[in-house]
Image (cartoon, rainbow, N blue to C red; front, side):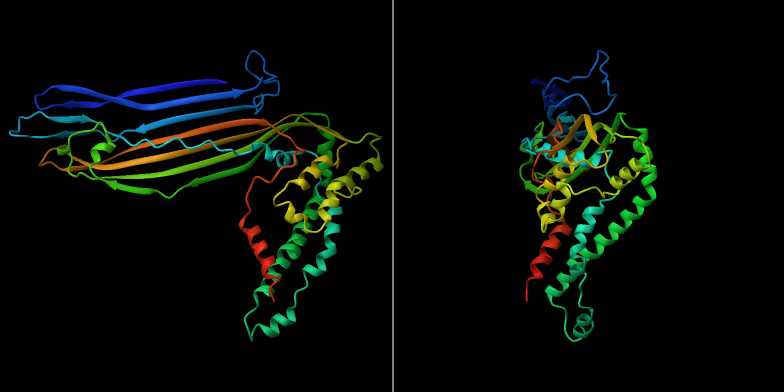
Length: 410
């Protein structure tokens, strides 16, 4: 564990009192607190270069950077004339927001949950088509596409459709027509690309294959909360006398921002089945590319009822697929890492009004403070870890659940 703290101070301006004495005012504008938790990083030489190249490789680590950034207002010149215009009292400089938000809490996001999904998407030996799974799922095809078209035409002009009838039509489209169209497109692409895919597998057998994929992008900004109060002197730094302002009121806006970026990087090596590279061997590999091999655990699991709903919350199907041998005989990963960058920021923006003199024009100025943390992590990926899916239900999944409930209504 390595920690480091840094503070930067800056001059804000010059204050001149009623007898003409000048004093410089300053305050901190940046605070940083860094902590790094890391393991040994194998594979690096003295030139700080990995033997795998300049990629996301080098071992697990966890870096947390907390910072406070204070953005000053524009430069102002304020004066006050008391008794005679020769009174030198005034301020020349910038202002800071006196309200510093609290640090946001560090999230407990489990990065390792993305391991099986990332491994399945990066595998260089994925089949072009899954014929066995598609054939097993066709057993319910006729039932899903059974729409009472005659009743639609005969009843709907007389009455609006029942919710259960509309929900059944939606389910038939999502689980019947749409999967059939996707399967047809996948079969067409596999038929026209299998020769090029087979040649690529032959050319790269035993060679390092690097893969890098994007997994998630998340961003959220909360609704600003406005606060107005008086006097504003307590919210501004440095605190100046009230006669330098044309108004005693200030307005503060506070909000929070969160972002998250998740990606994965790996290097694979694979070896195809042994044996003479003859016509029989080529046909056997072609069947594997079309997913026509004998049943494995993942295909049996996919054919069971309601497993699609189970996969919304758990990654069992992905883990079974990662365990199965499809095209290759052996598949290994020289390295497999998951990376994540998370940011969380609390923002406070203050707006108030100053004036050049008692008779001069007013000027609206604002100062902003940002307090947040940036967390960067890298962990070793586990392709066989049973976890809950890291993402929440999408709008389409919620619509399907709602349609299932409505389809049970009379």
